[in-house]
Image (tube, rainbow, N blue to C red; front, side, top):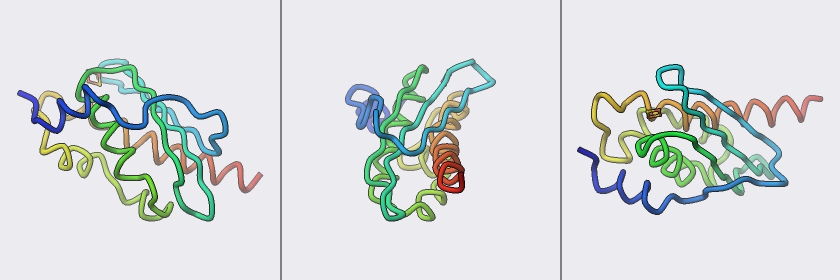
Length: 123
Ligand code: FES
């Protein structure tokens, strides 16, 4: 039921972990199932130099987080903000309809992390 890309990113997730020197952190919970994704960003000169994630969730959620980190790494903040949940699911060659909600956390948590970064800058 999962695509090869989903299975690959679930079994070998990219950019897993925490980041002690993150300058933007975002956390989003999934109201459908109670799972959580946390995204850590290191932004320098408007570029996402590094990104890590911690996801307490199902295979689809972990694969989505992993794919999202690959899509966002090296992008400018504005480019990263254009990445949507749907784009992440598409890059995974799709998710089963009943698991689409699982792809809703990764991009949202990254957007929240950018907001956190901007808030800290303004402080
Ligand atoms: Fe919770 Fe997939 S079942 S994110």
